Each structure stands twice: as C-alpha cells, then as structure tokens.
Amino acid sequence: MGTRDSYAAPRRRWSWPLRAAAGAGLALVLTACGSGRASSDFAHGYLPLDSVGATNHTDRIQALWNGSWIAALLVGIVVWGLTLWCAVAYRRRKGDPELPPQVRYNLPIEILYTTVPVMMVGVLFFYTARDEAAILDRTGNVDHTVAVIGKKWGWDFNYVEEDVYSPGRQATLTGVEGVEATLPELVLPVDQDVRFQVVSIDVNHSFWIPAFLFKMDAIAGSPNEFVVRPTKEGVFQGKCAELCGEYHSEMLFNVRVVSEDEYDSYIEDLRDKGQEGQLSTQLAGEVERNAAVPRDSEGTNH
Image 1 (spheres, rainbow, N blue to C red):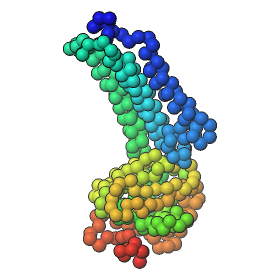
Image 2: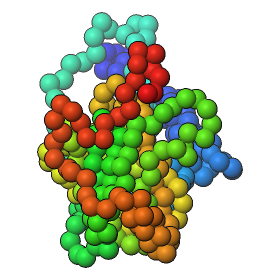
Image 3: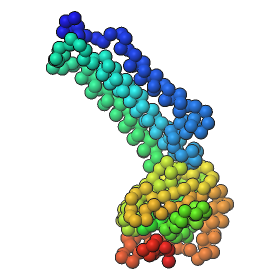
Image 4: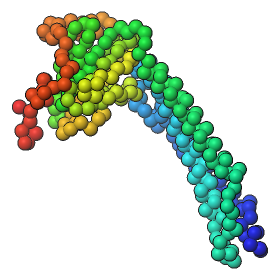
C-alpha cells in the first residue's frame, strides 16, 4: 500500500460512524417525543407549560425558540457525526507514514465552511429580528397602562389610567407552604392590551413573568416599555431576573389575569383602601420610599 493509498477515501466499512450518529440523534428525538409529560414538554421546547396561550406573543416566541434549538441540534448531530467519522476513518494505522500528504488549501471546502455558517446566521437573524419587531411593537391603542417600579427588593404597580397604585414589599420566604398567597400582586384584565412602563428607583432589576416568555430590564432612571395582551386567565409567577443584591431571590410577585369585571372590582378595592394617585418613579435617595422590611443579623423581619 503506497503513501497516497494510506490516506485515500475511507473504506466503506467506516460509514458506520455516520449511521451511529444519525441513529443516536433519531433516538434522542424519539425518546423526547414519547408519551406523557415528556412529550408535552418536548413539543413546547421545555418552556413553562402555563405559557401556552398565555399572551398574544407566546406562540410566536415558542415557534422561534423551537426553530432555533432544533436547527442547532441538527447542526450538532452533523458536526458530531463528521468528527467521529474522521477520528475513526482516518486514524493512523500500522505501516502508515509519519505524516499524511500535506496540502495548502482546499478551495471548495473553505468556501463551503464560510458560506454555510453565514447563511445559517442570516436566517436566524432574519427570524429573530422579525419576531422581535412584532413583540416590541408599541404602536396602536392600548386599553391600560401599568407603571412597574423595581426597588430593593420588591415591586410597586401604578395603574395609570385608573390613578391607583399597589405597593409591593419583599417576600418573606420561610419554607412554609402558603407563602405564594402573601406575595405582592399584579392584576391584569384578560384579552386587553396593556402597556408596561418599567423603571427602577435604585439599582437595575429585570421584570420577568416566565409564563409570558418575556422579561424587560428595569433600568434606574431610564424607563423601558412593552405592550402585551394576556389571553388566558389564571395566576402566574413573577420575579426579578437581574442579580440586584442581597435579597434578589425574594423579589417575587404574583400576576393574576382576570375578567374585565374582576379587574374593575380590584381597582375599586384599591380606591377603597385609599391607594389613589401614583407612586413616584424618581430615583430614590438614601432613605428609600417603601423600602424592604428591615432584618436583623439572624434574618428575622421586624
């Protein structure tokens, strides 16, 4: 066997690594597509199941997410297969020379390795930019405006058109069941467009409702806005997604999406409590308005 023959195209028996890689990828997909909860999770890209139909944007976000990770998985399978195939098919054998024939370049392969990734990034960019523009579209009329005020370590909510507010406080996580019922609450009407104005009065936070598949940074002194339409009644979790300090993990709240009548009743309840007007969105001084409950060195609330 000559030098060139030693590094010629691999024998047909080495096609098995490609088959093995393809089989592994297929097995992974079939396993995830099984029955029960795993199948449901896989179909929704392992996103929170309560996000299905939660807002007018969740279907779009889920489709983008699923398309992205499926494309990434397929690319990974091809790369893993080629890597394994090359490692096995072109391994050094007895009688092979010290080095294989050296070449300076392979123009067709280099063009392929350049154009394919550029095309992939271009496709991903197109769909991401398209969906981002739709999700962040703030044009058109809205039914309600809610000013979300992040602070250490809680959330305040101003219902702007109704001219009432709901002050929030830091959650008290004791490990005892039922804590969720004591969290601050944001109430939204179903099937109505809500404009959120998100701002912080101290350090940067991030307003996140996982079921909505969306979060928006609360930047000190620089409000951000987005518009969303809740389309499913229910209670959803909310939290801060920006590491903002000592009690970041306790910066929790509930989101309750209700009918229009229930929403109107909730607004009237706030008025009856004397919570009329709007809480300030200006940067706080050293003594913070509505600050978190102070704690002693043992973590006990006062």
